[in-house]
Image (cartoon, rainbow, N blue to C red):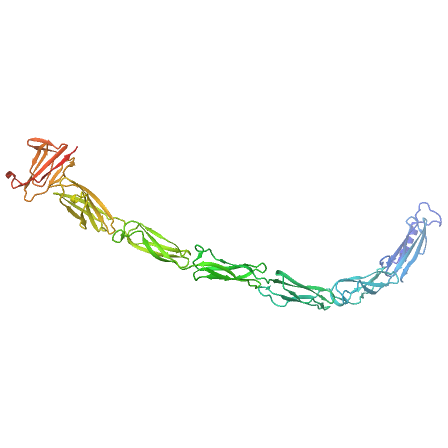
Length: 605
């Protein structure tokens, strides 16, 4: 229902609920006046202003009595802008009278944005190069201007840049959009670059003066200026920088830098070094690598001379070299001196400590000393060798001479060596009548056999009674019963000798036991046979004759006991002498030859 119908409905309800009372009279139990409330419809803007038509109605109530009368409480509508129109509604009930006044402000008309201003003048040449603020202005006839736009502008760069703004009145109405006047905006520095007048000399390094030029480009406001070219000629620096600043027409600046490595100083302290220590006594005797080095504090070394010396021999070789740094600067020359001898000395001779012992053979240790000469570093020394075997017909001692550079020359001294004596063995003796037959065997390396006898012949102490290559020798003219010593020596080509000694007692015709021999068992008596003898007479005497027997052979085995002349005899300790005669024909004929001889033997316990 409408506002008026609602109002009449409320009044009717009040009249039905609350009985009416005489005007001007207080009704006991109703002390409360009526309640009057304005009821408005329309769009409420800002600050209490309505921005559309406004209809004003009234709510009049009194819960304890009926409304007696109202005044000015009709509904009304405001359609025109107004800064303030008032309406008063008055109502009376048994509780009293209530009057309420309501003032309404209506502004339905938007304000006008009338212009704009910038917060500061242009920076350079009419150009703005950093943020600015554009403020708008406006007007409003009813509620008045409340605020206008303030726009901060910082991008994009543009010729004739503009911003849009509005104004708002105090009722909340907003003006149409207004575009500001145009302005030129460029906040982007130019694109600046720095360029060297020439390429780097080596490995990215400059070693002489260069010029750096600056240039720039700006697509919007255009280039303003760049500095003049700059020369760089030092100091040496691995991180040198040449910089310049360019401006565009809007006043934006850009710094261009050219980074470079600069070194115009050549390496210093050039020196050479050998690839190894000298071979001997400060001398080199084989190919030698020599490497040069230097000091360069800025760009550092790039390359130095490397060479190999292989000769000629010289006691004072001087090798030159230089170094180049990474910037291409070359040093002065350095030197490395050395002594060089790669030629072996000459072994000029070998001298044994003595002459050969026999027949060109050495049979005992010898020493051989070597000697030599060297034309460059001279001889440091030669070796000597000691030889003590093995036996060889082609023995050799190796020797060497060394020069002061350590070069070695070798040589060999050949000779025949034999220090091993031959062997003599199986030496036997066979007694004869004033003779002895000595036999032996010797090793194959024996060249000659020598037999020495003591006592010697012709009254000498010792005599060589045999020298030859046979395996036996008969010595004659011995004195019966005399003791002889024989030494049988085998001698080789190197004069080594070995000996075997035999002692014997010379016998006559009675061969054994030898004169004066000592026996424990019954001996075999042996004598020389006589041509034509058919038997022999053997006689044994011990103080007196104790045995006479006639053996047919030239020997007789004595027994421990025997019978002679009717008596029993026993072989007792003591000295026995025995005799032998040859017999011819029959025993009964008793035809004897001359006495062969006599000899003795001694029986011991």
